[in-house]
Length: 264
Image 1 (cartoon, one colour):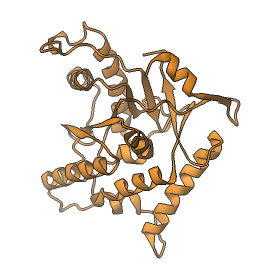
Image 2 (cartoon, helix red, strand yellow; image 1 turned 60 degrees about the horizontal axis):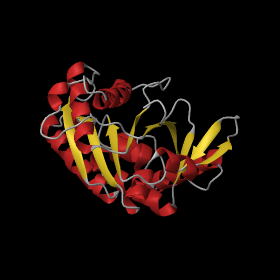
Image 3 (cartoon, helix red, strand yellow; image 1 turned 60 degrees about the vertical axis):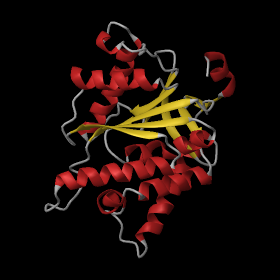
């Protein structure tokens, strides 16, 4: 995916607030989604990942924390929960067509964008060499969870470190070279400027992947639900959310991002 192909493939138009919006990157050959917790990728870009995987993209997940605080059960053995969440994440990634999941294993709720963790993210980017990276928007206002902000910073700082050879030069052995992705998509964006159109099939795969995170159904998916059939309500809410984003992008269903290319 080179710059000329990227520009030709995007539709450009003005959104409802006068903003410049682009639609649909060409499906990349490889993509890496960097998230704070198991299930973050599925919530924010699962349908996009499924769409790209069906087009032949190699999709990798990098999960930064161990998910050990993701329960309301005070009697839960956290070491057991970590293994459960790893298994759920692997299943969810497979449903979306993903190739593999890397777990960094940082403690849930205590993620920091320190030099050591940045180096780990850089090393994974250099090894996998994704054309497109997806991650949390570190500039999102009114964000509550500190891990999401830290994960966003680690994503962008890892990209900078991976591309420049004097960052972590000890990594550049055994054929490992610096790597610069061609595009960065930040999900849950503070200032959206890009939409990826998704199909009902893509969205169904996202919902199936979310429901594979069975340990999170009570705490994340259904905690506000008073419906007689909460799973049906959850599915309907996912559809309605993507229809609203589609209206913003003048398409039936969409996911929303902030796209960075020239700054990389």
